[in-house]
Amino acid sequence: MQLTRSAMLDVLNQDYIRTAYAKGLRRRVVLFRHALRNALNPVITAITGWFAELLAGAFFVEYIFGWKGIGKVTVDALEKFDFPVVMGAVLFTAGIFVIINLVADFLYSLIDPAFA
Image 1 (cartoon, one colour):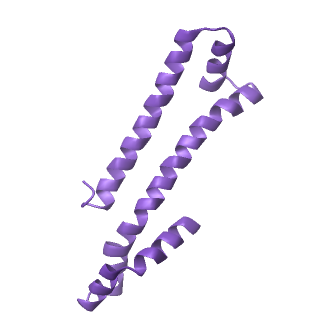
Image 2: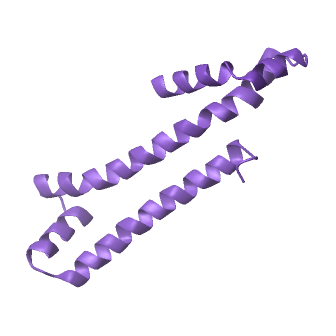
Image 3: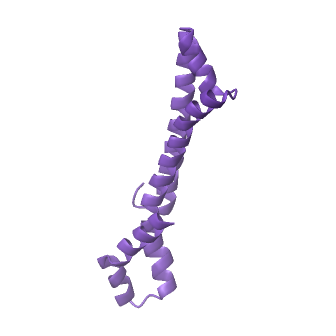
């Protein structure tokens, strides 16, 4: 919540917001069309970063608690020098990271048409 508030306050002090008010646009239009769209860019970046951290943290949590998952399988394969399994797990994890970043890029283009 703090990230959104800080980003929104930064955007509300920009020149283009004052220009929008000077053009006679209503407060609601300025907030939703101009300010909110630009304030959401750092929020999307932070959320996709959190997903990456969750995925990386899953490896440790699965191994520590003995849960069956890709993290435990990968660590067990590393202990047994089973490199094809390790390569598959790394490829799968990298694919998830790529998908998360593609979703972020898609959201950027939805929110800020100038980004695309």
